[in-house]
Length: 134
Length: 252
Image (cartoon, rainbow over all chains, first blue to last red; front, top):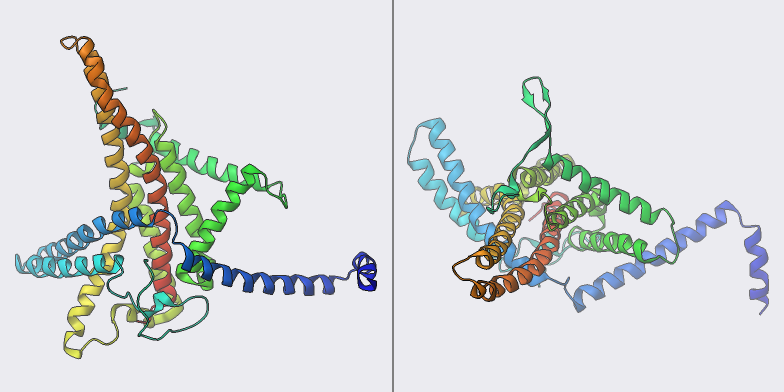
């Protein structure tokens, strides 16, 4: 009870140092709380329209890969006069890149371990499964 | 307004201007971009100016938008990615508001033009490339070399990875542009059916009955388009976050 009685008096003559100390404490507390909350939310529920959003992503990833590959091949042919070999080669490479894009968007190929890195943890073990797009 | 589904995308000069031989007219596209920025900035400034500890309805919307993007960015790029919050938030709000503007009858859809979406995508990708090299130096190139690849395959894999990286601005811009374009054309075509069927004199009263079906479709499509409008802004934002993550942690 004595503590509670004393508090209002303390607050009336609060110093800037004390205030910033309290702010820092609150900030640290909120930061820890937020980390836990974000982590929990990630496990509980994915953001709402994940499925449809992913469908939209997959459709264009593939086309973009092939188009960029073909475009670069065409450009090389145009510059070096090696038609049609540059286009053939880069169209195939673009196809490979497109498949990679799609697999990545679908979460079937681990982008790399860093996608799993949260906050300031630098690296996570390579054996962890890609859970990013779930 | 013309009845064909394409003319809604025409860019018209409202205030013809020319600087140094270049056409810099103020077009309807520019008008709606200005409106988009004015509305989103105005709304956010107005609703948060009260700084209520317990937010009202309007302030809640602003705070939800903030929380939504902040969580998205923190989840995919970590706390270090938060320095890009202004970029991601502006992109998200701009695209969202522009998409929703496009849903209003007679309004121009800014994001249904590939040059707009491509400019936005290039903004993201150049941020990733510049920041990636600035922060990691040449270590940024490790992005293209996956770990655990046998030595013989490295040149091939690197080539494929580079192509995959180069296709990002294209896929990012084409996705948004194609969805908005296709959605608005479909909507216009279906609503056009309603008018044509109901107005056909040969069909008489049967025309009105037949017009019910495309009318119902148009209603359903409108709902879908609203979903797509949000979803595309969301997809653009989440991919921006993931690409920024590559710039921050390029090591494979």
